[in-house]
Image (cartoon, rainbow, N blue to C red; front, side, top):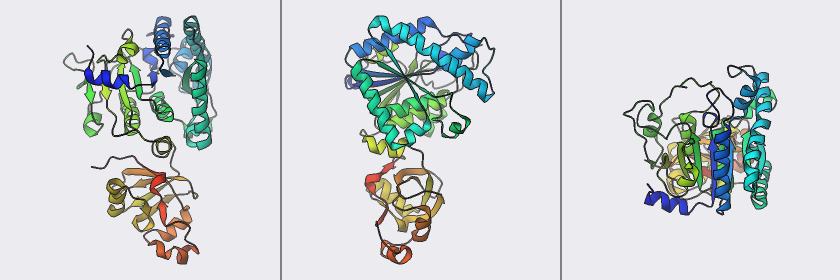
Length: 386
């Protein structure tokens, strides 16, 4: 049954990011499910034919590799895991291409790493490439590059739920759809017949996180990495940026088409506030901070409720090693991150001026380049003021 709210939101969607998990894409034995691939491809093509831009973030590479190799479980050795991903990724893309080509579309493989999002230049290049692919009529199919060297693991995106949220923020998609093997977020254990799907979450808070329940594998191989907790975190990243998110069952026939028609499937997470500008998204919700500044209560209030810049007088602690222009996390006295921003001063300089007024900068540093430690134009709140 269509929902008036969902119909209203769906009518505003020009770009949609879809993420599908391993369990919604493979058979119980771990092989790629050809019928499911065809179904997803047909729906993606229909969305594109309707004039919308669509991106698919697809899991399943490791699972496809495991199935191709005939393994009985997910490898724990890093080299073997990366080998399974390399074998599976080619099979995954081949399957999508076979399904899309008869529909007049082609799949475009895009493999990303954490560094691609941390580096501003690479970040913008990804965005430009994706929009060029839209112009060519291709369907971008994104995955994290699992076959990279060991050192890259320290800079991994995390999982494909988070990757989908980062891509949503990158291209400012109005809707993120996370397809799983369950109907949505339940008010109890999903396998409990008394549990019901929560149709709407207006705000993600501690109560929302308390609803996340684990579910059994039902005999399936342990192929996936995420889970409902990672989907909730992905929803938080996207809704904080001002976009809407739906968690739904990827096995439901025509689920994507029906969601974009306003059907009330799964759980809808409403955007929190207005849509953030692209640069603000990169600062607050994408790049990884290189240091932390601990703030006093007055500075937290100035940032959160008054929209002001961060001054040195409100900084009570400096952690990490960073240079001028690097991204830093702004932390309250309880250790909670409230914002992120680009620092005008490096670690050594900040340790000298922390707690001081700008009139002392020339005395302490030999100059006063900036009055602000982080200017409000280079700052993004990541915790909503209460």
